[in-house]
Image 1 (tube, helix red, strand yellow):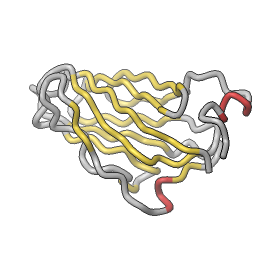
Image 2: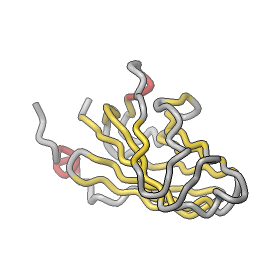
Image 3: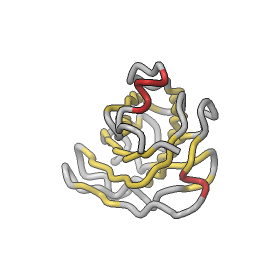
Length: 138
């Protein structure tokens, strides 16, 4: 079994590149968790995260800094949802999700298909969301 810091041995620094449309976002990996922080500045947003090493998503959850019951948030592999809705969070409470058991959970080195798609009502759009993805090497 590989160390939980296997990505460090693959010359990876920790911050993940991200292309944001409709909002601001950051992403980084620490130990075996990818953390994605984003603010919806529009009612529809998309965040594409670089994947500089191969991994599989095995668990996920979300926390919002404000009630965002109208928000809909998914983690995708390209266009395939790999989580159930992470949106509708109540202020500072955790939203658990289910992660599908299929090949879509796996990401290849450099495929850059890890995507967060978000939509919200105008009231929910300013909410800051943090998504945590537990990962394993593949």
